[in-house]
Image (tube, rainbow, N blue to C red; front, side, top):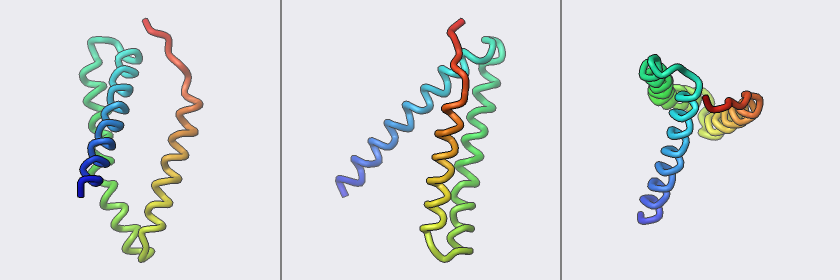
Length: 94
């Protein structure tokens, strides 16, 4: 049980690093007066993923009868996102 708590702590730490990068990137991308609404939009997208993600995984597991298909879909999504992030241009600080 201790290893599970340690794993959850490490996962949350890495997730927090990702959010820090997203907010910093948005600060460079958008003007200061619209920054709050842009962060709200970004957060809304994340919340939608948090709501629909488990429903989609459950639906895939129900259709296929296996978690393997659902996890394979997650791996493919992560790979596509990783490749797409390579092609995003760099921004210079204002």
